[in-house]
Image (cartoon, rainbow, N blue to C red):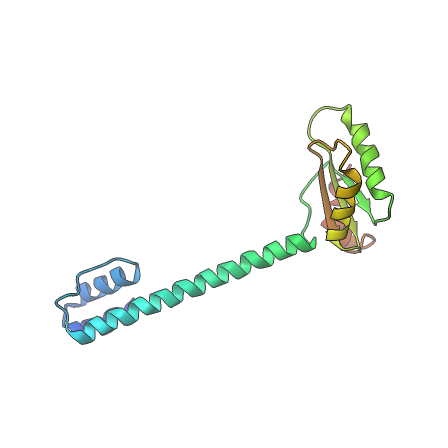
Length: 168
């Protein structure tokens, strides 16, 4: 805005305040009347508008990259579980879906919040999710929340990832 206002003042011959105001309106998306401005001032306004588009595209790109990175971390199972009063399963084997099913049956008689599970294993998150879905599809899991994470279940950081200190 400052540079655009300065150059617009020099090219159009307008007073300083009006030149800066018109530069601001141009960059903020307004449509002031430039019909009586000299051709070089009009070219400057077009250049400022193009610069505005490039800056907007850059900001959108940065936001899109940030969101994509966060979604990728969530898909990869490397984000922290923010739960409390949940069950934690450290490690994975073929019996884990059965254990979850038994805990769901035991919780079925109690009322209140749905049961929550956080599982951490060095296996791929997608594989764990698929096996749980396959083996529990016929079971009535109700509103149970089953979160899987990829990491070292025996490390302190892995246990922190599934909020083991806040578990049942």
